[in-house]
Image (cartoon, rainbow, N blue to C red; front, side, top):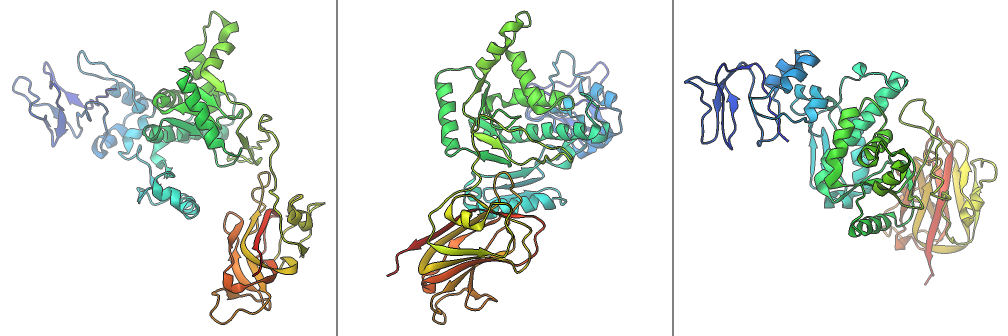
Length: 480
């Protein structure tokens, strides 16, 4: 694709020509590798602007000319960007649909990247992004450092002035802004990811997955490709834009479509219209559905389910569920050592701690307060090697335990220096762990602790939410 920026450049009866070279304007004169831009003993001149072609392909506007462009009206900018030298074709580019990108030379560069062995920042107002990146790195450190997981954020200058958007579909402007930003987010991510793989799968952070979904998706995609199926979308979820897979080689056409109509419709509607355009014969309406199914292949049963009800759009409640996904797992049972279970937190209805410990349900408690505790006193002392307490579940992900310690009561006091655990405020107990920001407490117990008589969870600060324990696993080993 070619794009030539011609701004305030005049050449009467002259032409700047160069074959396999660049005609660039630097310090108000044209230079080219191994050739010169000449025309009747005159120079190609540009007033505070550049006539550039980058890699014979795209223009990358500089801060100098972007300031000139920014002072022009939108119509004037479009006119200038579509000017070309005699005989040359002008193809559309991202600047055709997002002309505001010319105002900032870094508008198409991620503002933040966390990837293998590097962290790059280009703007300072990224507190939330840094917080998320830190959380990802702590919990997925191995995968970040291997290059499998990356975190990135577009710069603010990538987005248009949302106050100038057109109101479409009868939606309130707030909703138009929300879906517009979402469309551009998808386009940005696809452009970044295009060269990083063979297939591109769109997911969100609030989904429940089927076990083994990665292997299932990979096998299905390779199978359809080996069969020479001319597919455009492999669909692993019936809701919205979740679980949609594309060939990376075909992402440019998808991005182009999103950039053309980002203000007009939601992303899932745009995808449907694109597939319809690629497959349907307007003279044969009855055949459209069958034609689309050849390009848009659904995998059943669904591998992803949207969880929660609150949308990122303020006031929007999302209650839709994928009926093909099947039953959602709200707790995970384990065989735990016999114990007497008690708690100072009042349970909601029949969601008791005893049932959660036995693997029959999950525990759901009302508003934990500082000093509340959940105790598991074993009928016989046991040697615990590993513990796992998982709070929250897919339907209530925010009902978690925070600032809550995991403590054990040894049968015998450990010898001085045998263990490095801090003593609890409760006599005889040792603090062996704590719930993290994801509401999970998991770890091992040092062999020096020996057999323990009890395990306790103690709340160290008041909570604004109810709390769920959806998984309890106390792994033991026979005493010697």
